[in-house]
Structure formats: structure tokens, C-alpha cells
Length: 269
Image (cartoon, rainbow, N blue to C red; front, side):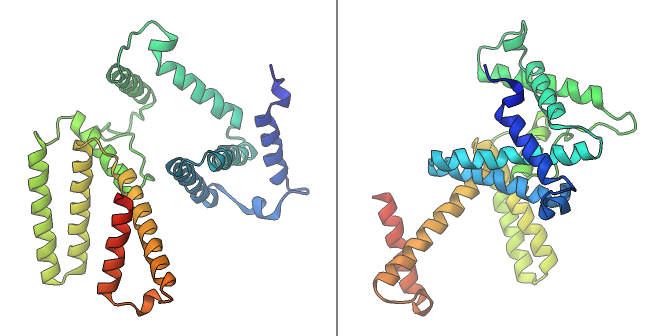
């Protein structure tokens, strides 16, 4: 067994502390705070997801390391303020996993993923009730982080609302609502009111997130994959024009659409 003092995580903690040491540390790292590091934390999580999408295990190993640095970084800054350290973070998540898996570490029974989800939700609810601020009225929507990407947060809010009984009875109603919102967006465009257009577009996106939840599709992941597909096809289109010694900027829309369709055909085999 590896000595805890020589464990790689301990070495990483020491490196991070050295980078933040006012005496001989890194000037860039010393200037950072929670707010300036938060964007990097989000970026590293997305880079992990990208490596998984590409099936690149070499990149995944590297990106997981970059992501691991983030909680160590935040915890180091917290330790400097006497708030908590990385060991507190690790202890808390370990305790939470044990508490939320009584079917593994206790006497509860779970024979299916649905059983596990029910136990998880019940345990999570118990934790929230224990920590609830007595001065704040509880809501069925509590616990949905505001910093999540908008589509992902929309689906999580909808899931919470659905558990409280606020949900469509069948998917046909969702489709009808989508068509209604699209009609309202069209009307807003015709009226030329930009603020109204922005609001109606948001309504359309929210209903699309609802549709994704009904289809058991993660809307954020679906759009991320669509972005990757668009980028792949567009770059392929650029390559086609380059092979013809022609610049994309000089091509007509008809030529570009034909090249785009060619890229779609290549992907479909």
C-alpha cells in the first residue's frame, strides 16, 4: 500500500501550496481568487467530456489531471483563508457517498437503477432538510445550481417541477407547446421588438429542453454533439474547397450548400 505521505495527491497538494506561497511562489497563481479560477474549472470539465467524446484515452488521462487540479486549487485558497482544506473536501464527499448508498454500505435494498435513484433522492432530500435555513421557505426547485449551463439547468428545473406534479401528461402536449412558442416567436419577429424576440426564443429553447427530457435526452449533451458535428462538417467543407484551390469566402451559398451535403453523405457512408 502507498504511504499516504507519499501519495501522488499529497505531492499535488504540496505543489499547489508552493505555487501560492507568497515567498517564491508563482506571480500568476498568487493573483488568482475563486472567481478568476472558476471559468477554468468549467473549461476543464468540458475538456474531459470532449476527450470522452473522441474516445481519446491519452487525452482523457491528461484532462482528468487538469480537472483534478481544480478542486486542489480552490481548496488551497480556502485553506489560506482558514475555511477548509482539500482533506475536508475529500472527507465530505466520502461521507456523502456512503450516506447516499445505504444499499452498498448499509442494509437498504436496491435491485435496479430506479431503486438507486429513489434512494439517492430521498437521502439528498434528508440532507437538504437538515441543512435548511429556517429563515428561507423551501421550494421544490431548491438544489438546482444557478451556474449550470442554461439547457442543463432548464432540464434539472423541469425534473424538480415534474416531481412536484407540474408536468405535461404526454409528449404530444410538449410538441403542441413547442409549435405554440414557435408561432409566438414568429409574431415577435414580425413586430420587430428585439426584447420580445429574446424572450420568445428563450421560451422555445425551454420547451425544447422539456422535449429532450421527455425523450430521455440530455439537451446540453445533444447540443454539444451537434456543435461538434457542425464543426466537423464545416472543416470538411473548407477542405473540399481548398482541394479545388478555391477559397470558401469566394464561393456562392449554393456551392457551399452542395459541399455541405457532400460532407453529410460522407458521414452517412
